[in-house]
Amino acid sequence: MSWLQDAEVTLPKTDAELLAEAQAAKIREINDAYTAEAEPLIREYPEVEQQSWTEQNREARAYLEWHAAPQGDAPATPVLDNILLGRNGDDGTETLAELCEAVVIKANQFTLFQQLTGKRHRLVKAVRAAETEEAANAIEW
Image 1: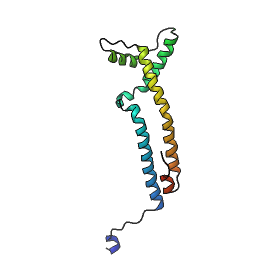
Image 2: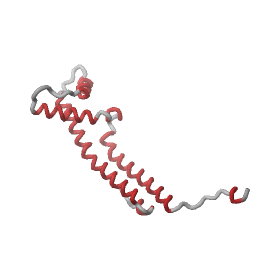
Image 3: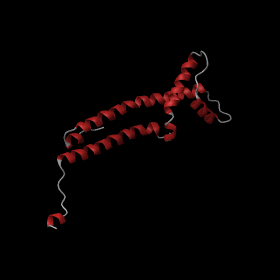
């Protein structure tokens, strides 16, 4: 064995390696800032409930449209019906229309938040397009 094989030598990182590390760190920073902005909207809701938001929104909008001008049978609202049963318990007075209005208000807030989703996409794209470590590091949330 030669001394070169036995020696622990750490070569300096290449510009490409430094750029890749800076890009990865900046994307983590952007994602963390995005998550921090989302936290107030979602912190009170368990993930399993969040998974039903799309269906809740769909049912609520369909019901409210029907409720405004009822013709024929009301649309099926199985998710909201069950939520309402749980919310009202034995003596609650909340109506399906009231629940639907509350769901739509929250859905609208979350829809507006999607502007920040677009911002996150734009910044990540810019980080990936950066050609130097300095350029990547200059991108801010």
